[in-house]
Image 1 (cartoon, helix red, strand yellow):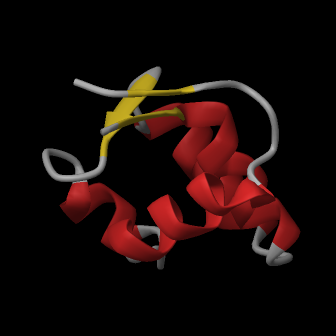
Image 2 (tube, rainbow, N blue to C red; image 1 turned 180 degrees about the horizontal axis):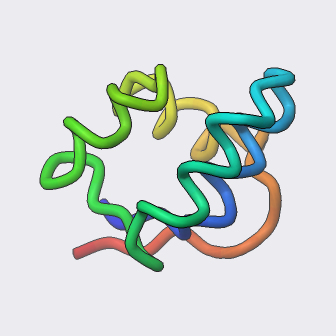
Length: 68
């Protein structure tokens, strides 16, 4: 599943991790595939499955989730 980069950045900011959010803003592609980019998500302290759960569970920060 692809996730909009802005949603991931929002999750990091909500966690109070503004430094990682700034880094993610520059390093993540516009659309992040939770499987293909799992290493990048891990680098920013995010578990790909947790990200999907938070965003799919109605706790997302706008944008859209798209299926491959």
